[in-house]
Structure formats: C-alpha cells, structure tokens
Image 1 (tube, rainbow, N blue to C red):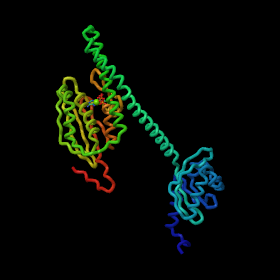
Image 2 (image 1 turned 180 degrees about the vertical axis):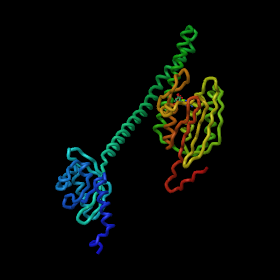
Image 3 (image 1 turned 135 degrees about the vertical axis):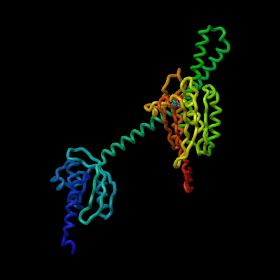
Image 4 (image 1 turned 180 degrees about the horizontal axis):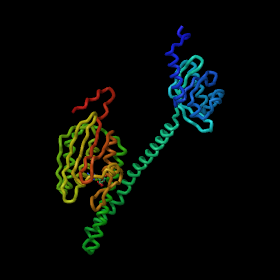
Length: 376
Ligand SMILES: Nc1ncnc2c1ncn2[C@@H]1O[C@H](COP(=O)(O)OP(=O)(O)OP(=O)(O)O)[C@@H](O)[C@H]1O
Ligand SMILES: [Mg+2]
C-alpha cells in the first residue's frame, strides 16, 4: 500500500512539517497517555526552561502547577475518550520556579494525544489589570455619584438660609450701610447665587448618572424651540443668531435631551469672542443606525489639547471673569449621551469656532421586532 512506498512528495511534506514544528513559538507535542511527552518542539525548552533531556523523562504532569493537576488530568481523560479541547488554561512551572499561564488546545490520537500550548501570561495579566481598573473606576464613580447627590441635597438647605438672610439684609438694612458695605453684600449675594447654580448642576449630574433614561419619541424641533425660549435672555444679551436646520424625531429621554441641547447651545452662545456676536447652527443628519445632532458656533474655539478634557467634571478653560460657569455642563452632556448608548465629541481649532457632534444610536429593537432600516 501507499505507506510502504513513500513518494518524493511525501518526504518533502514531512520535511516541511518538521521545520514548521521546530519553528513554532507555540508549544507543540504528541503526549503519551503513559504520562510522558513523545515528541515535542523546541518551544518547550525555550519557554519553560527545562532541558530537552529532562522533558523526555519527566512526567509532564509534574511541570503542571500542583493546584491545576487534577483538572489537567480530567482534561487528559476527555482526550482519551476521543474528545477535543479548546482553550484549557492552566499554570506551568518553569525550571527556574516561575509560573507561566498556558492556553492549551488538544486533539486525540491512538497512542498519544496532540497538544498546542500558547503562553497567555501577558494577556491574563493585562485582563486582570483591566478588570481591577474597571472595578476601581466603578467604585470611584459610585462614590462620586453618592457624593454629588448628598452634597447637593445637604448643601441646599444652609445655602437657602444664607441667601434669604442676605436678601433680608439687603431689603431692610441696605440704607444703613455705606457704599463699601453694599458692595460686600452684593458680592456675598453673587457668591450664594453661584453656589446655587453649582449645586443645581451637581444634582442634575447625579440624577442623570443614576437614572436609566426612559425613551420615547421626541420631536427634536419642538425641543430646540423650547431650549431657545429658555435661553432667550442669554441669546439676546449676546446678540446671537441661532439657525435651526431640519430636525428629525428621535427616540430618547426628552428631559435629558433637552438638558443636552440647552448645555450645548448655551455654550455656543456664551463662548464668543468679545464684541463679535455669535452665529449658532443646530442641525442633524442620519448615519447608519444613528442620528448625529450637531451644535456649531463661530466662537473662540478650543485647542486640540483640551478637546477631550473639557468633558470632565469642573474643567473650565477660562477664568470666571471671562466667562461664567461651573464646568459641569459638558460632563452632564457626556453622561446623557453615554446613557443613550451614544458618543459626543468636538471638532474645533482656536479662533475657528466649535462643532459639537452628538451621535445617538437608534433605540435597540425589542426582541422579535425587526430593526428599521436607516434612511438617507
Ligand atoms: N462652544 C464652545 N466654545 C469654546 N469653548 C467651549 C465651548 N463649549 C465649552 N467650551 C469650553 O469647555 C469648558 C467646559 O464646558 P462646560 O459647559 O462643561 O462648562 P461651563 O460652560 O464653563 O460651565 P457650566 O456649563 O457648568 O455652566 C468651558 O468652560 C469652555 O472653556
Ligand atoms: Mg456650559
């Protein structure tokens, strides 16, 4: 039969396979059910540090970490019954006593089984590090949310007291004060007002962070009109022109979407160069499976180095004398967008205005209902 007459092609193939076997960075072996390696490549020596002569006589289970031996035996028993294994991870003990994590796949043979092992120590270490970091972040986030909630509630009461007594002082006793005294009073009232804003923003942030948005159909045009009415005084003060393009209906949480647009349009109106009235454009376009809502302005713009960090809590690029604010607006925006499964980012250059793009994915279809195809 064929086996008796190996053709030149067969021996060429065998030569190639031997070369490939030797070159593989993965551990390759035919392992006997008697507990010894029958044939194995050089990667075993290179990666585990055991000399070939040792590996030839040492039962392979002895280089498996003691805690993983019984599970490894169970996997070998599966191979003995003709099963294959994919991604069995166990620890191997190297000659120098160090530990490597290896992911094994294996297939059965007659007197031996065939195994391929890949060193996944680095990957596992990275996954472990990532999981720990995610845990820490989640903890910090939860703490921050609790803090924001408690702070905003507990600070509100004493602040209300301060503000109302300042008001009383102003109404009843302002005349008894000299000019300097009235100025102190005015500054104290302003401070209290700023604190009121800060607390309100913190409360909004913690509310957005804690509550799952309940989605409904929202007419974006109507929503923007409402926002423009709220921002009316600021728009008039800045002599801003706001141009609104065609806007679709979206599935979103209306109050949160309103908050988002109010922050973005409010910023667009606010951050204009002194003496140059801003033009703000609000528009939307369809992309695959999502709508992108854009608020663009022709204001002072943002340096590329700051374009990510402006979305963090309390980040402001200017002093309060130049532009008022608490630095929470965009952090709230990012939270809202993330809660809707979307993304927010800015395109800008100093002096060139800003375009804030908010990508809002279509709401995931309920199980069993077909997804609507994106239009346009
Ligand atoms: N349209 C814009 N043009 C230029 N800079 C902007 C614009 N929007 C935001 N920024 C910059 O990003 C910072 C953060 O914005 P954010 O809305 O979070 O804070 P704020 O407007 O200063 O205060 P708040 O919104 O809490 O009242 C701003 O202080 C400003 O420096
Ligand atoms: Mg703002």
